Amino acid sequence: MKKYQLLLVLLLVSHYLFAGGLSAWEEDTPYGHKINHDGSAGGWVCLSMDTASVCFQQFYFYKGHTVAQSDSLYFIIDEQKETVQEFQNKDQWQHAINEQNLNPIFKRTYNANYSSIFGDGIFFFIVFFPVPLLLPILWLFCLVSLAFSCKWGRGFRKHYAWIYPSIIFVMMMYSLFPQSI
Image (cartoon, rainbow, N blue to C red; front, top):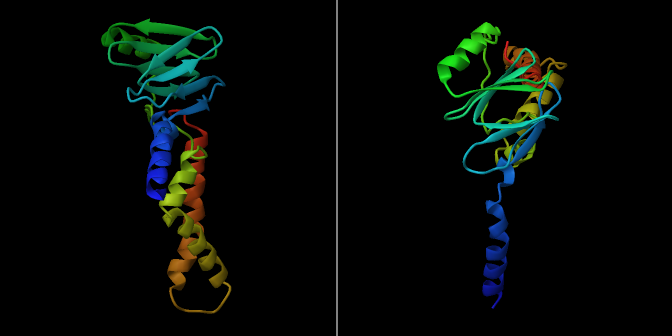
C-alpha cells in the first residue's frame, strides 16, 4: 500500500517539473531593462522596455544596443532611447549594423541559456557536480600549506594559490559585464 501511495505522490509532483523549472529565468540587461525566457522549448527570449516588448532567439549587447535575431526577423534595439528597428531581410540588418557601427571586435552572442554566474543554476551545479566545491578547499589547503616548510609540491601550491583566484576573478568579471567588446 505504501508503494502505491509513494507512486501517486511522485506522479502528482512530477507534473510540475515540466513547467520550465530551472530553464526559466529573468535578468536585467546591462542597460536596466528586463530580459527573460519562460522555459519553453522554442528558445524565445523577450526583452521588455517601457515602450515595447520584443522576442527573439539570439542576441548580443553592444554600445547601448541589443542586436538580436530570430529565424525570419532581425532587430536593433536601442535601449537608451527605447527604440526598436525591425528588419525582414538579413542583408538590410547587416547593412544597418555596419552603418551604426555595431560590429564588436569580440562578440558575445547569447540565446535562451543566458544567465549570470550568480543565477539559480549555480546551486544545482554545486549539488550535483561537487568538483567546484572541492576546488576552493584545495586552494585553501595550498594557501595554508605555503606557510609551512613542506617541500612536497611547493611549485604547484605556490602557483595554484594565485592562479585559482585569478580565474575566479576573470569569470566573475565576464559574468558581471556581458557586453561585447
